[in-house]
Image (cartoon, rainbow, N blue to C red; front, side, top):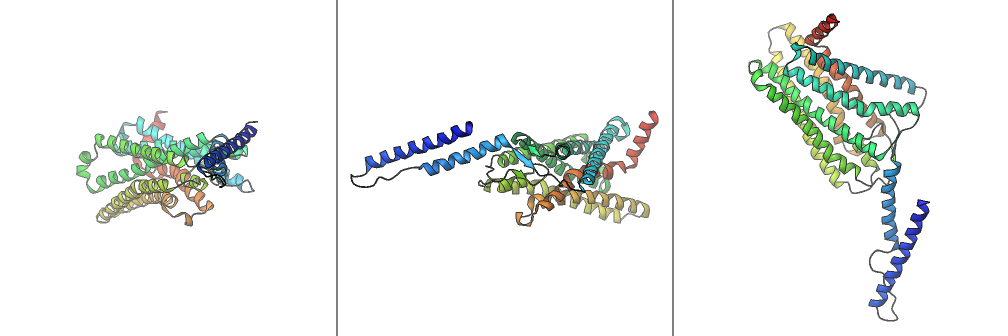
Length: 359
């Protein structure tokens, strides 16, 4: 019924504009000449109304997520793996948060930052994976425009906060190993709160800048998102408006939130490895190298996948590659962070044994 009224409105409005334009043309032209139509004709008006209809359709229909994998013979296996990774990540991060808060031996700046990294990872993976798993079980991937906007806003905020936090945590490790005597001064509790606040501020700024620009574009292409969540670059491919503003803001945000923290991480761990190499103890050197290499592996995986997604030209992207790289930093990294950074740590394992002994 509303569609019929809309078409009738277009016809009436087009006819009225044509008649009005002819009247204006006749009043300004000598007799015998053909009147000209001034301003927008019915075709232009109908195009504008059609564009408005597309935008309204986006708000009402929403989008359809194609998912990480299709329903075939091997999909059940992949679904089980993703479920296992999700629950393991939730448990590992939850255990880390619990141990660091309950054990007095872990009330140090380093573990304070690690506990907040676990909080970000828990929120981050919860924004994306549950929706993907439910869509697979229900056999559909519909998502409303508001839900897609909320998901885009949240994942950008959590991802941006983790970018900054990992970079500042690398600086914390650099001070602890290369300048241990000055560590209480350089990494005080006041500095820790400043690190945490700056991380969340950077993530929030990223969300408030990119989400409105991304979701305000007219989505006049297909409403099928060939992805497993509403990722900004994927949403951009559905848009047909002017992308200049978005691309400019995206470039600035990527430089500030990817290249700068990654450069801090690289410089910090380079200095750490140089210092470790100069150690006289072979056992200590071997242990430090193993720790630094595992940390660098996680950081490289996280930053490398994000650099591919947000900074590589679109001509190098394919839907399969986009899904794989996005899965690395949205699903796998929240599991690896607590395993690599904390649960392999002797202090954390000691705290876990003390808690188990009390029970």
